[in-house]
Image 1 (cartoon, rainbow, N blue to C red):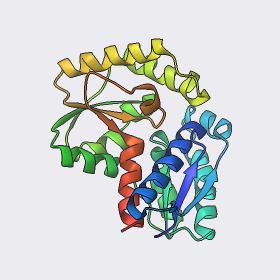
Image 2: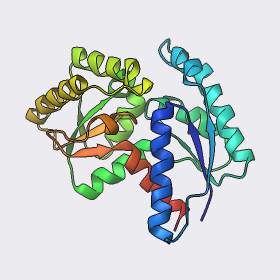
Image 3: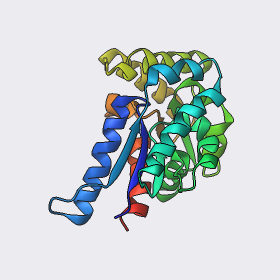
Image 4: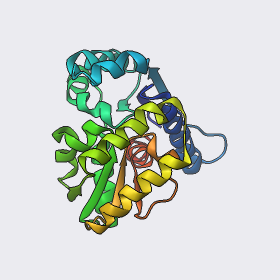
Length: 226
């Protein structure tokens, strides 16, 4: 079993799911008392979030790069960023490390291909839905439909005002479900939960879920636990 390096804290609530999912994958694959070999560098999201929301991506990338260097120095065989939005800085971090990194969109794309979808909806933080760093990589595998501008603002607010603070409201579940229902009417065959906090909130939706955490972890586990 290879050692997986995790850049976490982006947010801590989703990092918990990465830790849980990877350990369950190891237990299922090897049985007994086996767990995953992991090295975690957990950042303080309060330092990174204002940099992201003022487009100071290079400064934010330095925080992630330092975390990546810590797991690399600790002996990790590869590295994962435990968040969708922070993949906006993926290329900078990858260039600074000498170990492989697994991009979350490649993992989601493999899941889309395996399920045979040709058109999917994408929900997540505003930049994830709007910017090319995510959509262009995902669109290698299928066409993408996103919420309206007002809907994107609403989802972004739910994520940063509540989900990242470990607050989950039924009202937010219903709001996003209505948005997904409308995207279904636009021809979406499934929905990418392009924020690592969303799967915990959205257990059921009008479309099949593509859980970014589960797919990212499975993608890395296949490599690390072959």
